[in-house]
Image 1 (cartoon, rainbow, N blue to C red):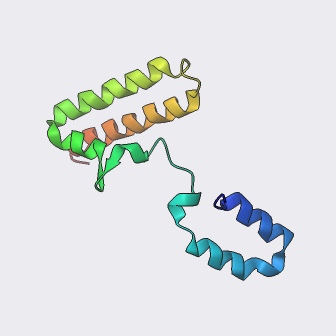
Image 2 (image 1 turned 180 degrees about the horizontal axis):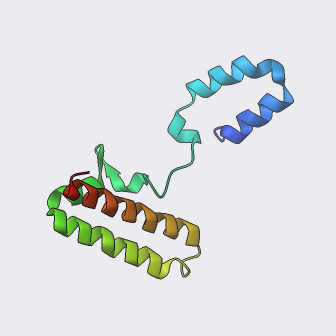
Length: 112
C-alpha cells in the first residue's frame, strides 16, 4: 500500500467536505517527512547527517576567506552547467543559494 500524500488529502477534502476534521487528524498522524516533497535546493536530505548540515561543517572547517571562495566557486559551477543537466531552474536556485550564503558571509565580515 502506498502512503497518502497531500494531493490525496486535498482531493478527499473537496470530494467529501464532511470529512474535514477527520482528514486533519489523519494528516497530523502521518509523518510530515513522508508526504512532503524534499527541498533539494535549501535542505537536501543527503547533505544532512546526525543533525549537522554539510555546509555548516564545511564553513567551520575553513577560514572566512576560504568559505567565501568555496561559495563563489559553487555559484560559478551552477551557473556554468544550468543548461546542461536537464534541471535548469534547480541549478539556478542552487547558484542563488550559494550567492546568498556568500552575501551573508560578506555582511558578517562588514559588520551588518
